[in-house]
Length: 144
Image 1: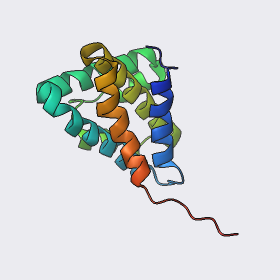
Image 2: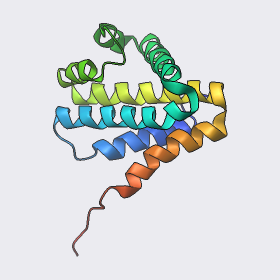
Image 3: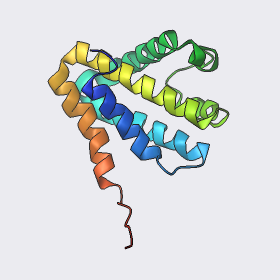
């Protein structure tokens, strides 16, 4: 599966919609951390906590190796699963760079999961979780 797949575009769109109109880097960091927590909650019953941890670590490694501009910033994570440390790194970065990192991390995670459990189950577990959160966000009303 390439990163330009339909699923990859949905992942990018999902994150983009969640951070739309967010001007504070702390809020962007919260969005990505929340997505990671939601992903964890969805995957633990299927592949267990150690499986999720391994998947996350490998996704992080792939994201950094494919995007050298991210490597210097995120390779310093002592524990890639420490979301508090990850959030503190996010807060020190440019908002666009943090969003790009989130996109790349989630695409890598999804692609690895597809290889592990197949596309149908991966789609139901992850894309539906992210899409559900999008559909529950309040819509912006437009006045005539």
